[in-house]
Length: 397
Image (cartoon, rainbow, N blue to C red):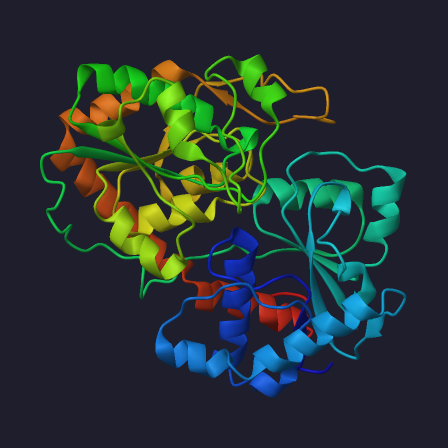
């Protein structure tokens, strides 16, 4: 099997899949692969990396642009390679636009499935893949139940050079900072965070909600209306992203009660996380283990996640805080299924905030232990397993 590699989704440092692809690429180069042997089939989005890393991947940009232009100008053409091609694969095996025009030997589906539904059309797509990479036990079990092909559990990771405990700057020493990250959508549960924070802030006005919730598209409002925790959803911005600040004001938050972060490159996130006193992720569903939560944990931030779907692995294997109250999720009419999703009670989130606020030293000690365990979740080690399977042809790693 050839040691060359192609990645068919967009690489960037501002999205989950973008970071995932970038870290696979970096490990490919660390293990001795040549940049000339890597093919990126989509034009790169914005990347902000340390200068030496940026220099290392610079040779990939011209060819990626040429391939992207060729595919756009020749909509009936398909590219075929004699080496592995990695594809993104979500619910019902739907991938990113255009990746069905790039094929390899083997074709590898890197899955992040959120809705447990598989239609005949989805099975037809799945037949194009020779193997499946699952990034959580929840996804691995579901894929195996479908009997679509070989399934390998290869977790996503963190960059320990960036995400590790370090002192805060002290700029916010008189505030209690609560971090919440992930693109604004119903699945991520930002409405639950908002409802809990409003109650907590009323009692502790020095608290400050730090959000990194930007999304390129406006989320569906119907599901949020069903849940009843917030009033509508943020409007789309005139250029791109969401108008978060007006929406926060509409929800009753004052200007000094929150910090709304823009799209923030992964390189800059450690400095944000280390300022925070805790992080909360009452997500209704995660196909993977939640990269942002893992990065907060690695920085030694007391972190709570909902005990459902892919996030269960963070609780069971690493021991971060958890929201155990997982009720039935109210779906919108457009949702095909919310099987295994969980609705975290606002009361439990408030209780976690109060507990961390009252027992800061104890919470930090427990979080430091979690951060130590996160060292075993380095991208380099976890993606080496993936590359041994994909590029070296190993069936067991």
